[in-house]
Figure 1: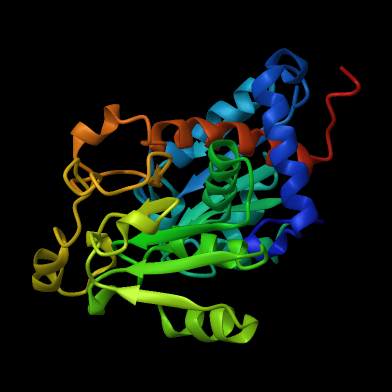
Figure 2: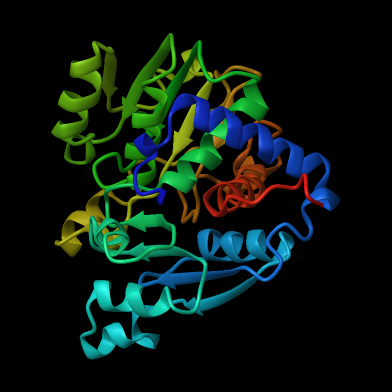
Length: 308
């Protein structure tokens, strides 16, 4: 039984296959309208979500399947004290595949040990978000035509940002990528990433505090919000929340083919005036998320468009 808990669960070949299928789904959606007929996806979201939950639901519906689940812990038996294991075991009686988001690191992995259906990690605390990583990789490949030979800047909350952590791990397997980490000292990437990814693989990276000084060299900038829900101290959040705001003035010295990515939701870290700039990719990125989740659901369920 295959689950997707960590982006490193996927080989480079797996990723290529999923991205290729996502492209085919985008180009020929009619081929895939019934591939998950009679299949059910359960979305177990113990933490708020808009794009991830709805894109999973849209993905399954467009594959001809159906969806059940909940969108907050308060509306599940977790509010009564039910364990993750028991919730997963119960839901596995009703569904063919589960997408789970949870505020605690490792919760989807724990659930995967107790069920005989695939579980997809839809985000666990500040740890991993593998389907957002697939979304990001598909976006980079569609915008740049490749997954190697570029300079990428990660900006904002790099300490708690699970999307950043997941994407760094995935990109570490591709060649000739230059990494620039743009954040205040308090929100720098965790030590485990520095040691387990960069140092272990001999990959160099730079840490800077000012976006402006590196903007001219970036091919991609990956913006993130400062996440209030990850802070233990409200004063620290208030002090850091507006540290980095991307606006048209900061883009004056950027490359003409810069790609601006953001996993969303946006608060104010990208000015709305940037939305009309052709370099803004984040809403295209959200659409890419539906296509790649369709490809992943098919892969984990072992279904094919060939029979249709």
